Image 1 (spheres, rainbow, N blue to C red):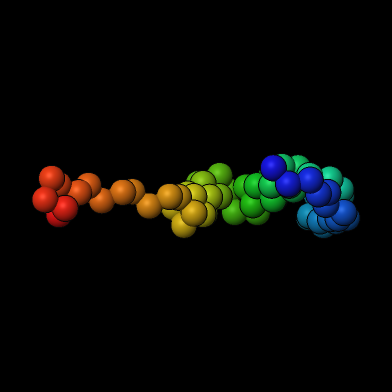
Image 2: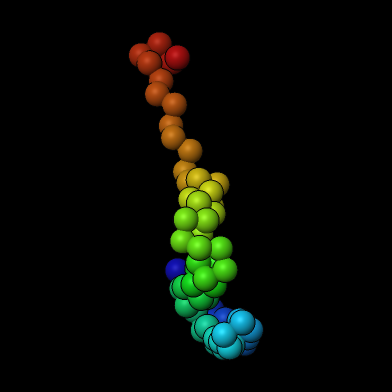
Length: 70
């Protein structure tokens, strides 16, 4: 695990007001990003996007090799 911190000041303006965030860790930044994605695109679109990200970075399944190396 790496030891670093994030220094960010995120301000978002919505029709009903504004929000401010100051994440300090990658986990906090991810939660903020997901929250903003769900608010902007809706839960189904956000889930679809997140599924695409997981597919992109998922480990590739190993191809089974038979007894003859095939």
